[in-house]
Image 1 (spheres, rainbow, N blue to C red):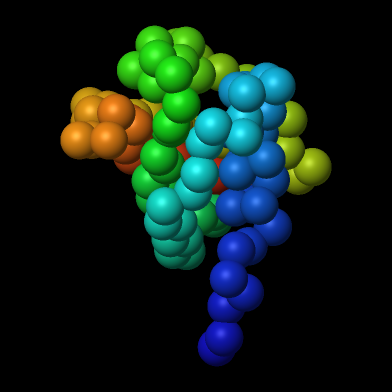
Image 2 (tube, one colour):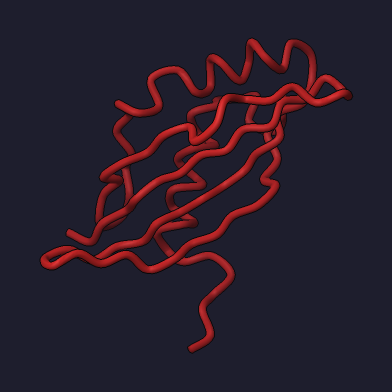
Length: 110
C-alpha cells in the first residue's frame, strides 16, 4: 500500500510543533520525518520520528524555549491525540551555529 508522504496525524502534529515556536517558526526547518503504524491490543495510532534544524541568532536559547515543557504540552489535533512526545536525543549544536533536534511522538486514534 502506498502511504502519503505525511499522514493526517503527522501533518497536524507538525503544525502544532511549529505553532509552539510562535512568530519565529521560520527559524525551524524540517530535516526528516518518518511515520509508522502502531498497534496495541486495544489501541491504534502512529509512531513519528522527526529531526529539525533551528538556525539564526542564539539558536541554542531559542531551541530551549521551543522545547520547554514539550513532554507535558497539550496538542490540538482535529482527531485523535498525542499520547507521548519527547526529545529523543539532546539538541546538538552544529559547526554553523544551528542546532539539530530529534523528536519522537505517538499519536492515537480516539
